[in-house]
Length: 300
Image (spheres, rainbow, N blue to C red):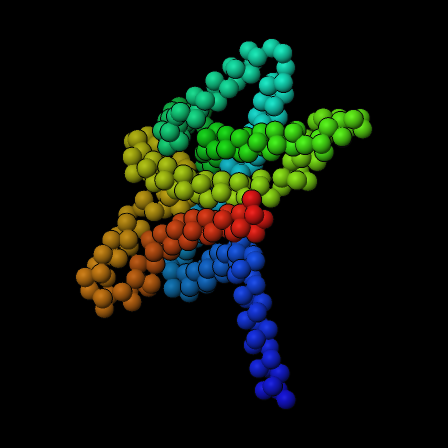
């Protein structure tokens, strides 16, 4: 009877797994991301030396914290800009609307990497002049800089949703009932009927923040001035990837390609660089899959 019961459970598990893959790919990839990071953490705890393990742990936490702050800043800036633009576009005076639109267009025209690098130059000047002393302030500064170049996509999405609902009888009927327009837009249009769209955009922003932060920190860590050292910044995956040990670990992959027998040594002797590279690439792939999975599940 036990064998029969176990045989019946196997098809049920396969059906559940199939439904999870087809109906909720975003949840599947979110689970894979957590399991992958957990497995890497267990492996590093067993085979990576203690100082490198602590640096990797701090770098990962700081990178995720910076990406989370970017999402929060993007949400605040994007939501505020969407409401302001919608309000100004419906006024008789078009000058404030045109000025704000022109300013946002200037931000769009500036490449993200260039804009963030300019912000880092200012931060470096503040550190050299001892104006900024907190080692964690650069995470907040970076998150704010990245959000300046990512919130416009959220603003466009919110305005598109608002304009779409303005053309429906639903919007006009609620106005006739005496419901304030601000409540209709914020609660009924954006919160109740656009939450999946907003969440999908924020997940994509989270992945973009990881990519930009790691790229910028890698560039900055390689080309810092003499007065600003790595000790002035909190460690991130990008700065840890730029360290000499991680570079040597990454170069060891090329050695393994020429000597296949050396491949087994990568996960033991070159674990720091391999772990950093895996965390960056694996997180970016999972964020991309989660974002696309939300689009598929809600048919956005």
